[in-house]
Length: 445
Ligand SMILES: Cc1ncc(COP(=O)(O)O)c(C=O)c1O
Image (cartoon, rainbow, N blue to C red):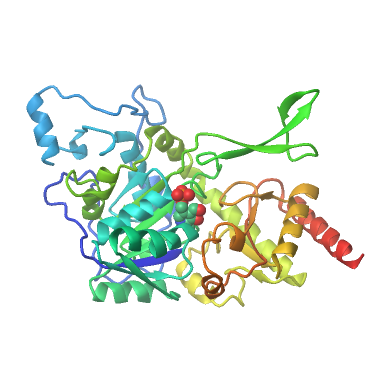
């Protein structure tokens, strides 16, 4: 979970909009609940959308444009008098019924009044920042943001809009949100790493963004699927990591994201004259929305197993003498804070880091873990059912300078592992031990 606090110059209003998100209004002055509602219960309570012919799944509305019986209706839709709340749609870059249904599920998940889904996590982040900040605006952000967001703030936004950023250490989410609200500033949290077990909006954040191609998708296919092909008698066939293989990228090549927040803000993103989602256009494809809606109901079950295995492996790795960084371990500096925020039944997240000190040692271990013992795959991203491993300093955070990496705790040999839930826990652990002992043997020789 990483926070961005941005100057609230331009938070939007729903005055001339219909409201497609019928939900209770949130009052920031109410004390925050100590035990926030379980997002699984909130999801189960949300409206079940059936398909056109009574199908248990919603239908896909794949049309780009929508027709009206009376031409006059068109003008009324464009002025905001008639809208999605009354089933009036005019163009899918604006609200689309299937994407709106997924948005309502995301709002239930995160406990916000509203949500809408975007073409990628980065488009969720950039649309929110551009909607909140005008040219010359200022952002205060955590040092530990995702590398792409960090680069957006350090390079792209200063160049294109003169929006500047101060990076700070953000440790206490609730105190930060209180401080922001006292000053009339909007608090935005990227919750890609922590769905279900942390609900930033239920703990005071105004806006929550997601890259949905991670834990929420769970299958890594909505961005790209890495398949292994082996050549057997001159014909390429699919296989699990084997001897003669190479990687190809296939799949829908469709990343996905979401913006969850107050209805006035989500509606402002779609303002026909002033909305960053409407005018820049990175909304979600309804076919992707349909796929993701089918994965949300089992997100809670998947998160419990990601978190359980990450805690077991982190504990065992530490006992083996490895330098492990995992907020579920009691000696982690943020353990107590996370414990006070997280929903106990889920755990402390599915990501852990092992510091191998040098990039060469990190690469050697990852190679053994993938190619010899099949513990996981060397790939960026997270939330896949198999374990994914990457050296953050040379991949997802490679854009950061040496000093910025040091300040964010990214050492050259840091391996980030997104712990999967395939196979059995003991089977996968023995694969980890096998690779580690091979590495230790080779060092002795
Ligand atoms: C925390 C976080 N936020 C945002 C993004 C960007 O998401 P996307 O790749 O869907 O644009 C990522 C991608 O890895 C991420 O890890």
